[in-house]
Image 1: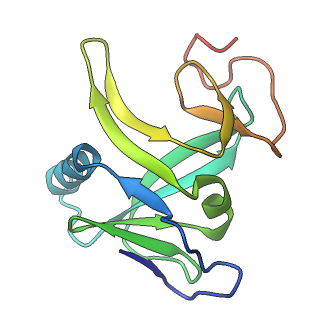
Image 2: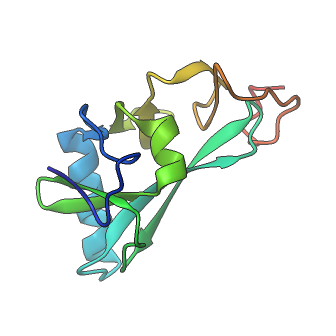
Image 3: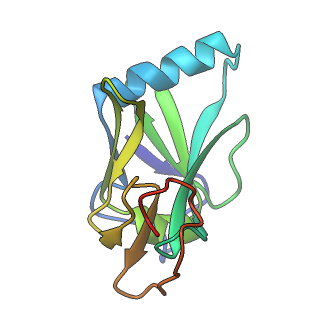
Length: 140
């Protein structure tokens, strides 16, 4: 379920804002419980930086901002601000664990390229940065 805290005509959307897999929901729920953050939501955002131009971020927050979009999935809430929404529309958030590492992975249909670690991306309208500012060691 998707609700917009204070929707405007520009922020109303027809397609899913975010899809959250059961694996991601379970990990978010686990983190909320272990950190004793009852009533909090996970903010998912995009900011400038990273080796591909934009980077993903996540943080737990208790209160939504006025124009946030709230995504409900299996009893957990995610918040997305209007600016990030334009880059995250239609993305899928998953949590993966393998022998080498584990973490949240965002499959973003708006990204035309990503760095080696997947934390940084570029859209068709976004700029491109050089270097390895995400710190993964595989982007330089």
